Amino acid sequence: VALLLTLILVALLLTLILVVQPLTLILVVLLLTLILVVQPLTLILVALTAANSDTGITAANSDTGSTAANSDTGITAANSDTGSTAANSDTGSTAANSDTGITAANSDTGSTAAYSDTGSTAANSDTGSTAANSDTGSTAANSDTGSTAAHTAAPSLTGLKPFTPDQ
Image 1: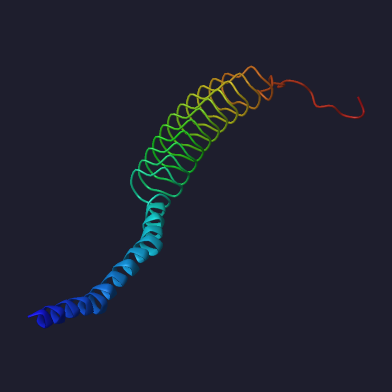
Image 2: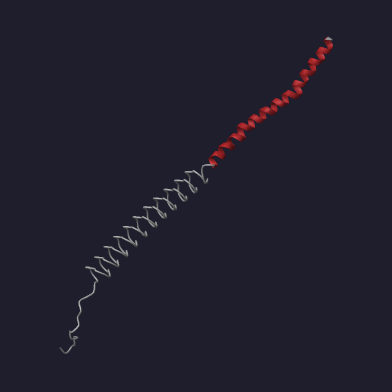
């Protein structure tokens, strides 16, 4: 019986040495892999979800709800499309080259800046302007109608004799 018990104990020890110890080594290797490989990969993935993402991002070149450059919606940065306050925007913008409700240069409607079209008080405008090169109701130079400035129609000289050298 004692010999049988010692044989069982030796078998258990050999099992521990030959089976459990390699398993623990494998577990240690897996833990090291998690620490050295998977954790940096997760950090890289988290960093990748910041830049160039599509929704709710504040990084560059995003699409929605972004506050960075070249975005599309609800943007306050340059080259945006809607509700932007930056340059080259389209709607509700206060910057240059915008289209609607603008107070900056080269705008189209309700603008007070240069090269605008309606209700403008700046140069080269078309309607109700008080600046140069305007068309209607202008008081500035080179205007067309109701102007009191330079280049208006000259008084008529009909009835005057032409000048000749022998006079």
